[in-house]
Image (cartoon, rainbow, N blue to C red; front, side, top):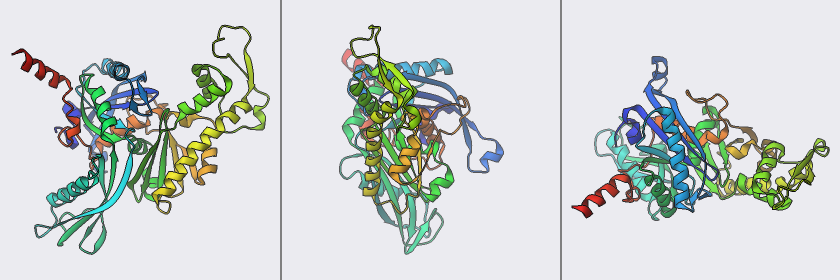
Length: 430
């Protein structure tokens, strides 16, 4: 690995992130520069400015899983090319978000003997490595193995044990793991675009970094990212990332319900949902009438009509199902006591009118819409659909960043990247 925090994509101060979703592929290219003195004193030694971004309609992806390699490759190529043209440079590697592969959280403790008079950085590395090895015991890929607290002998609640004296160092670890095959296919798709994967991160973690503020993370909060094909969640407590999950339900399923009920094309259903949709009906919606065509009869002058209230009635069951499923996952996690009473909604699907109110009713928590943090180089009105990509950039700047990279995971060496193909051609030709 090279560059700050070990990211290969930080060569020459350039960071490139790629968010491959069901409805869109987003690519951001940013330049990292030394931060002003007053920011450096606050623990932020560098700052990022976006110099190129690309956004393309996704193809060949369903619920975060690659289902058609060629189509997904074309969409990724188009998004990266668009960002490269704007930035005026060519990128070699990317940091990739992951929502496929049955994201799962596991919390446990690992410990090692302290080999010197006081705890050294090597001891911390050893105990975290032991935690990562334990998390991978079932053959799943470890995306994150983050320390949520240290213990030295019988003393708990230690944030940084370096320089402290003791006999045995223990760490509480939160590990996020995924199944190998879906992740391998996603990485293979990126490599076919002549790009290497410098790092990977769980999409819900990235979205939370972009939308949850520090006080919310300390008091306890849940970030729910409502995407097109998946709904992901990340829980923070005491300032630490403690739980993650993903559901194969999202905004596209809401659109499908509407299209099937009205027998209208998907494009028309998406238009109706975006312009007139609401999570629940209100009395004032009865008088507003919407016209729409029927499947196969788009060119027929006579259009069907429906009230805005009826549209809301058709959307509400699926929205409730999604939040009820989220509530069940949170309850099963056993984190109800520490997760707090705050929910932050983000993602493209979060823009449905009335969604916070319905989420509050189903989840029984305070709910707000979370727009991603402002970042230099991006328009001020950048929407929540960019939360994951912006979170990936923020993660790359964190001093505790721990993303699996080319040197940390054998699964990344698929042997299908550009250099691998060149090597194969040389071996076969000479």
